[in-house]
Image (cartoon, rainbow, N blue to C red; front, side):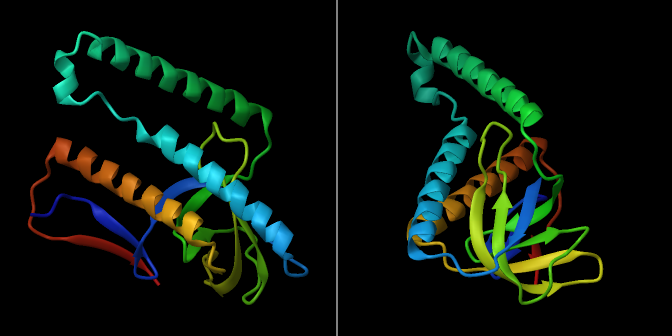
Length: 198
């Protein structure tokens, strides 16, 4: 049964799709091993925090009988509210690129740009995952395609196993949340939807 959700695919892998602040920075020369290690470490920490924030798990039904279940739910709502308020303050105080449509996973990204880079250009792609996170994830890549509408395809240098796993987990959680949201509204139909960008 079709759930009314398109699966977001990029280079034959599950991907995240959103409207986020994204910036391309051209690299004049390749990064050295120390800079790559620091970048990888920062990406891992940023992705871990983003995943923790996005988790928004609710108290399971088995815990509903617990005398503290309602208190835990109220506390979680208050913490989520504080994180959102912090994000609004941070976004207002920090200059960021304009949000654009972006689709990404550990293999690459597609994003819209008003001043697209040149095909073959190497650089860093900054993706700001949430307003409450001060720093973006930054992935090393090379521009492989730019279409006339300004859609840019960047193929990433393999970001390392830990970063790739976290990016995959992020895409899966967002997809799972999208499916759950659609199931709540329960659309009818019999087709399967897969959205691909090549």
